[in-house]
Image (tube, rainbow, N blue to C red):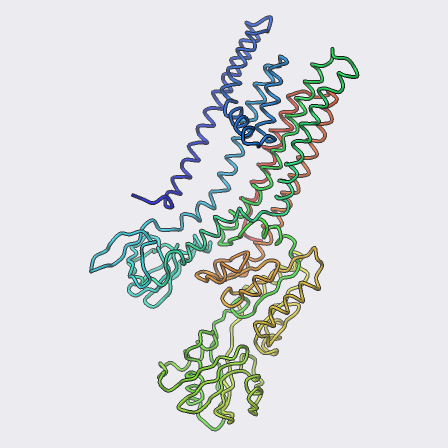
Length: 637
């Protein structure tokens, strides 16, 4: 039997079924209302109990659940909501003999509710697509047989078999097979990624061509798909300031209008005469219908929710409306260099030895860098092309921001930047070439240096240009690389400022200074590769982790996660945030303006219940349709 977590697609189906039921109920209710109006016009001459009866049938059919919700909420102390306002207004209309108005208001209220549920369902579709990333089952190779189990029951080290068309259930390494995998659900990118033996793969992707055998490297709870699903599920918990304002506004606004309606019904008859009481009661009931804050309470969260869903289609995971709103106020974007603006594909481009051969210099560097996962270290080992004998090296000490100190064949060697050489009082030569310079020394003797270069991403220059067009005032680059390298990269892509030769702590301090010096109303976003930038991602107003597939640190620390390494999506994320905020402002201004106008007219008896229906349901529908425009935003900035 399938576990509850895997029935999400079924839940989407049930929502659709409910919507169909709502449509049927509205159509039946509308037919009953038309029949009541027909009978009233042709057969009922004197009104009275017969007119009440024919209109009460569609009223109770359509509005029973509204009356029921209102009663239950009152019992639980939740009095002032839209169900209470509708119940109070329509029951009052029935009491004063306005039977058609009572029935029609309830019918239109249900129409508005349907549009609300339809819009929310449409916004949720993008989120539900993300939820379907998880595989229902994993096929594990045990005792020479393939066993079907839940992904949660697979252990690290198990071999899972993934056939063409199946989702990869857990993160791991391909141990047999060669195929293309579809990463579109995670990254939004249509082109498949080719993988073969030795390549890492992540859960949530779809195997395309042939059977893959994958050795599991993480439990399901720690897998990429589990982290992404947790992020998506919790996105609604982080509300924007505007959402919080609307929630507080509705909390005080609704009781205020109920009291105002009561005063309208009672005070004028006291001073003018009780023979006008019914007219003022009608005005008070109209006032109640107009005042319902549905347009604001529904459309504002819907705008943000729809935008988060739209962004997820392009592999942009936003942890909540709070961060989406903050991004719209961003005026400074700070980039980490390596892996963000550059490809991070370091390669040895020059070897300059002193007193020893090029091969011997490269060998010393490779042995020292053997246990490091830094891209520079990987490039040295790649250039060496052999597996170093680990028995020849010991006492490895990695000095952050400097390099490595180790014992090789009994001698102390130093491999790192010029700071490491100065720290150990080793006289060394500067290099005129642009790139990362790795100096090598044995004991106190300088042996030469190796030049490693990193390639700038093709999109980096374009993203800087687009950010400036979007009104970003300042772009900044941080790097631990040499000033000459940083200057060359910044000049080529158009970065406004750069800070080089930074230790990890220096990057945090630098971002703090930039935040402190900026206008308090303006936000700062930091963009990093998500592997070693967690402290800076956490400190920035908006932390954006780029190229974060499979990176737990990125998903944990960042506010926005780009599932691939395409910097173009930063501009699109900013566009979504600003577009969404403009829609939210439009809805707030439109809803309040219409409601205040019709409220004033209703209080003076210049409009009736029909205008009240437009001011409530009509405005809500228009605001909802406007909010749904976030779903149709094109990804080309």
